[in-house]
Length: 275
Image (cartoon, rainbow, N blue to C red; front, side):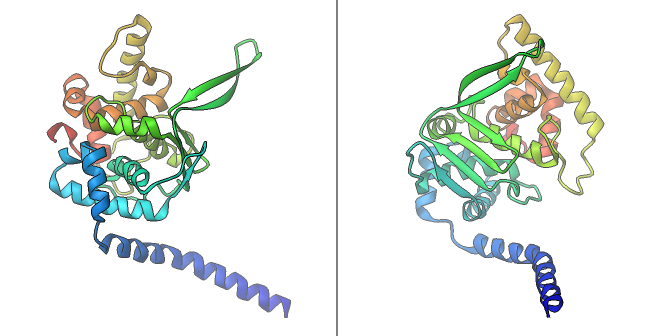
């Protein structure tokens, strides 16, 4: 009897795993078919001016992506913060910029978005060259975890959204990390969309490492350029920083780093220099 019960449960599990992608597609289709709430539209107009720069077709696509994103992601307030509808809309609008025109699973690895009122403090333990552990406390505006969480400062989120052309956007930064982490640890080489025949891993690596080396040289010399020196830390931070600039300062990036811009445009499937 126990054997048949075990087999039956195993069969149900297999059927559930097989059926889940079809159920998820059906559920997302239902969500996208509903009207975009008027209240959300007002939030976008007031809080996320970058959306107004998008071509009409991309604005419509972004709104549908936002509906699915908000329906599927869990938003948790931290440090006494109460999550509001406005917070969900502002965060979703900026995150979903990264998946326009792309086959997407809506950041399938992201389970929770934790939001603090402002910068949050994290404790870090590092080991120096002599093997000595160093303890430090850092105030952060955002962080991306491979375990399925994105942590954001609400104050930095709304400030990043308010100025659409300064190349500083914590939501874009952290969700770029999530894309980079889809094939393991973030290293500045996010996996391409399945079936993307235009992606060339060797070319991507050559272009990115050349631009990364240029930024590191600027940082060592104390020269301020288009890209923040924060991106000179490592390739993962470089990818997140240039993603911010790509979406918010497309024309400037295309002018100063034309090869880098072309790689990002091919990856993200949009052309912000023309917005």
